[in-house]
Length: 173
Image (tube, rainbow, N blue to C red; front, side):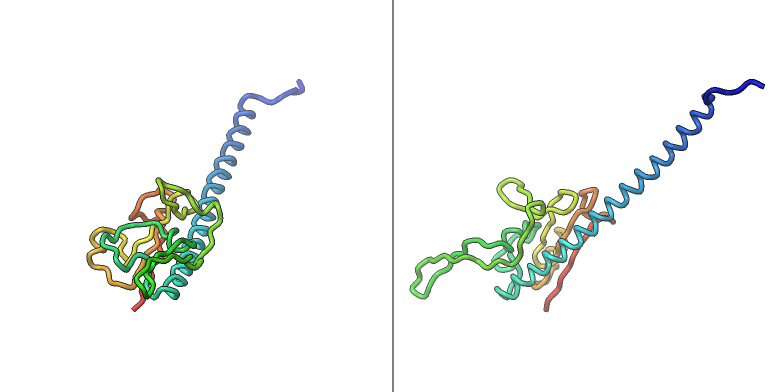
């Protein structure tokens, strides 16, 4: 009987096929794990932002942009939660400035610039949207009640209104 010195082409192809199958399985599992991690990180960030908004409410007795906001559309919540100059009139009618209180701190990776505004970003690099008075679309804006807000991450696909959206809706009466 003749001894073999190597592998046949069929044996090599079977082994390569098994390796490719296992690699595909590992890649799919890693992508799912990555998306789950991003989803959990975004949920935690949205909860933190909600606490910052409640701190803002505790200071001013109004949610950000409720007072004097005519066009209740999506906006950046960042500007309301970090210290900034506030202008007010004193008892003599003179304009004064003061530093607003810090309602929330953000890590550098949680903030991005779009145009001239800073936005809080989710784990997919998309802006987290803030809707004053709880409205998250044009129709709901007209029916919304004062004392509500909604935070929205558009999720992995970046589109509003899909199943992968992550929201926090707060109502206070």
